[in-house]
Amino acid sequence: MIEPDHPDLSIGQQCKLLSIARSSFYYTPKGETERNLGLMRRIDEQFLETPFFGVRQMTWHLRNDGHLVNEKRIRRLMRLMGLMPIYQKPNTSRPAKGHKSYPYLLRGLRVDRPNQVWCSDITYLPMRRGFLYLVAIMDWYTRKVLFWRISNTLEADFCVEALNEALHKFGSPEIMNTDQGSQFTSFAWTDRLRRSGVRISMDGKGRFLDNIFIERLWRTLKYECVYLHAWETGSEAKAGIRKWMTFYNHQRPHSALGGRPPAVEYWLRKNETQPDQQVQRVA
Image 1 (cartoon, rainbow, N blue to C red):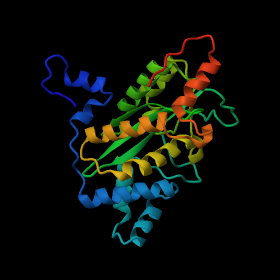
Image 2 (cartoon, rainbow, N blue to C red):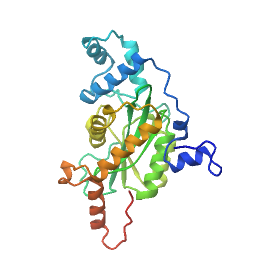
Image 3 (cartoon, rainbow, N blue to C red):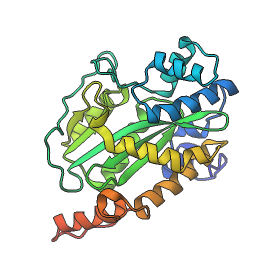
Image 4 (tube, rainbow, N blue to C red):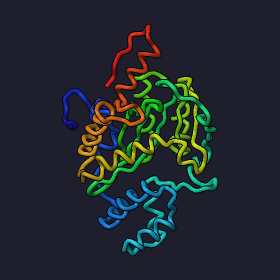
């Protein structure tokens, strides 16, 4: 996919054209033992079912499943995966030191049109001998995935790159909602939104349901795509995710949309709200 010796395009330019982080090209799936990678896969599967499991509960669950693990190992792996359990106390998605958090703006808000509210989140992608991270930006009303990007680190850069692409292709939403993770409280992310006139909303601490639609997307993606494959490389993972995202947006019936796929609903409703404007369809 990437040609290191391309006569005209640098590796960075090729990565940009393919919408992948440059670091993904250099990614070599290594660093964790086969046992730890297996545990991470089990933790990921269980976390989809019980997002309120903290380190202690996850450790007990794995022990009951026959795995000889201690809390120290599970804490490290959950931190590496970017998993934050949902507690009924203010101690979950904590922004990085010096980062500002923002109030939740969607409580009681009637969302009734495309581009009124977008949401974003990051999830962990297990592979055969490593792992990656996926960020997605979704339109809240139609559930359409506007843009996504894969990275091998949890730095904010790949999130901001995805945001820039979504803003370029679809314009600016009125509100962007995320959790309080360090990527979304970073200056690069919040400054980009402010400069685009977007109001910033963040989930309340311990409020799993505040960003429920994208959490449901992750569950669907993993059970319909990720867990059915054992990707070897970042390129394979990207191709698999791209194929499923296209299916999800354009073909997969959505119960909340009367059986219409998200992309169909997005353009239908957008045309209804902008009857006098020529709307260019973007895949």
